[in-house]
Image (cartoon, rainbow, N blue to C red):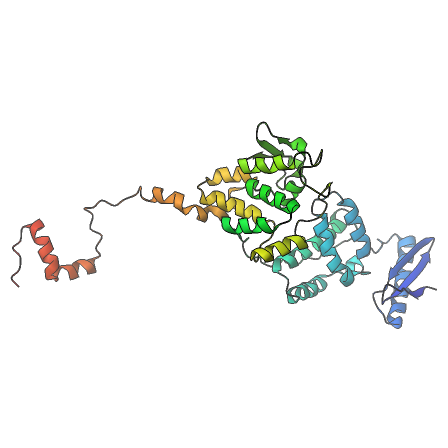
Length: 365
């Protein structure tokens, strides 16, 4: 039967064979009459493709599978899958040519109304755009690429802990997370670099470690000088695994650190609105407050541009105060405005103060 229902979908599906080419796909509708119209239209399209060489229609599902197959080594592929799970029930079975700007705008508004941040909505839009761009520019599946705008996002926040708050949090974390959090606070390394740290990338004698360019977010190698606190953490980890520095139950970390244990520890410590990545903000903020120059902090943190580290500059005001005192106005310079001078001449007390300097007799009261 050309039209049929599946248990895992509310829509009618079509199964067609034209010149030996088989197609099985969703019609995107639960209405049988509309599904029959879709069936007839698709049969005609397939005939045109086989006999006239017309470019075949490609579905969203095909594009997602190909994209994920090509991005299997991408570091953030897990995030892509998360956002694609949001898109899937909305675009399932749709032809790529049907994903127009109006369709994208409709779902963008739906994402905004759901209460998520503009940043989350933008990440969803970005993975959609990445797939459509590849379909148009690399796979030759689309003739026209729909254009749509992302939302404006506020400037990146800087959320950091005081040393007292950090102590409370570390006390509440389970052992495996506590070790990673301490190392993050001591080095400022990103979550992925801490989880993926191997003993082969650590030189205990020279108190240093390094992140390969292929593993760094900025695609540049990052030297990591190890402080006394970082060295204590590494010493505690020695002997637990021959290859990986940080492990969980004898195996390397294969999951994100923002687990239930992390969230419960935050709650017990009385800390709100704090993510794992904010440990890096905390490390950088402590450096800025201690007077570490911004260009040095940029190198330590592996940031590509000075602009990325300037968000912490205001925290180092104490170190700037001594420089502010280096510019002084000569004491003989009169800062009074004309209005102040006029009022001062009519003030007897002011004249009395001036008398010794200009040689005038004081006025008689």
